[in-house]
Length: 276
Image (tube, rainbow, N blue to C red; front, side, top):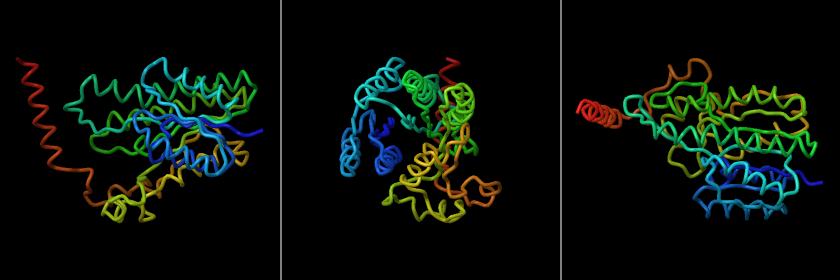
């Protein structure tokens, strides 16, 4: 019987890479996308090119009712769910000086709540079908290493890593394993970031990662070769956050003085509005 996987956010760089690698490892796929239909269709074509099925759903996973609904549809179309990959999310930089309640809600619903709701929905189908499946959540090395202007996104990725461990305990009685993959600097091969000072000075392996490498990490954690692994976060970052690396790194693109000044001015305007 074919193995079946659901990958959220299958239209983007990492999500597409995960889906294609899983297809090469024998999985039929169901993928979601939010707005990038062209990217989702490209992923479908790549999956089908290796002889596997690929169902594509438009899904706004930040809406509370959508995760269970789309996972149920995937279960109907695929016939079973062996692997759930929670990958879809939103990235953002936020200064504590200027972050609003809307900023928190937008990132929380996409990067934490949707992950947990998708994981729970898939787990229910696995338990009902008596499948000793696997749930893998794509977090980030930003959940472990502190960066400027990253307290919301990075904090939520840290929450994903922590939630993974409790989920692993919850689902161990059903032999369902739960793990995280934490990408580091991962860009498409034609990205302008590939040869920047950030890469040369900050990453021990002197290059950015690619989507396939994250896909292979997911395939490994879902495989029988990893059948005794649960509750871990596997970093795929070329050594980016090894102790001491950030202290040795030169100032790089993600620290921009113009952005800093913009945030300072915005914070002062917010303060004036509150006083008024």
